[in-house]
Length: 321
Image 1 (cartoon, rainbow, N blue to C red):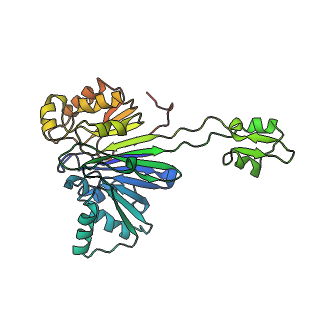
Image 2 (cartoon, rainbow, N blue to C red):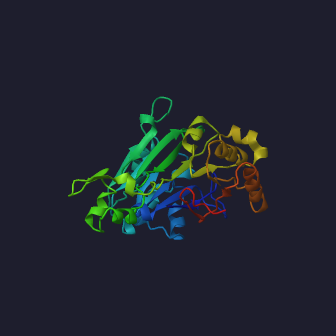
Image 3 (tube, one colour):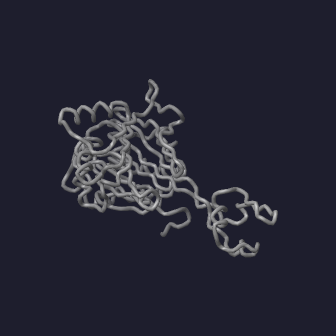
């Protein structure tokens, strides 16, 4: 599991940074990747990465500002040309269906795969119904929550489900059991009845469960309750840091956050690693180092993303200093 930052700038592209798009690579877990936001020219950014559009499984849109979704029509049509024929699900705020269907209809675009568009089910205030859960299968849960921005903006919390621990083969051999089909049952069944009448509890023959990881990716936002809820105990929090801490008033006025605010939130919520993105084009070179310094005053593992940077998400207890 790793994050690939395809665009890390705010508002409009610059020579150093494209606008927002983040890929969550799930090659080992699902043989696919998920995309969070799709700013203009995201498909061009993909060409300079190891990502294959044919393996794109899901797209999550945080909000309907152009720097977060203008790249959708081009990317979706290019997926057909690059061998993508498996179904693709797009999840986003109300209005994303109208935007995309209008663009595809007017341009007479044709897709060689099934595109499923799921708009977030929200109440009159924009809060996501059903406790925010927007996806679940055997391996993952995805939750969404309303943030605080000029328009309805959302964040997503990806929870990897725990996996059974390793089979304690020496202990099984001590019970007189030799390797074979029976071994596989210990990861699937809570108790195993043997032919000699014994009943073995599977938990006694497995190591501790492999704890799933939590990845939180937020759209544009001020600090708010929604960001706090989604960030709790995350292994990685991807948070905008449009401005430095001395521009806190400006950030608040434009419904954005500073590097210091993002880091304080991460520290308060028990986040293991903060990755800042969505930077104003005013910050370059040493000024970017200033943002990192401001964040690390509150959280040691704080980083400033750059275009085409990859971050491998470690399992708990496996972080290198």
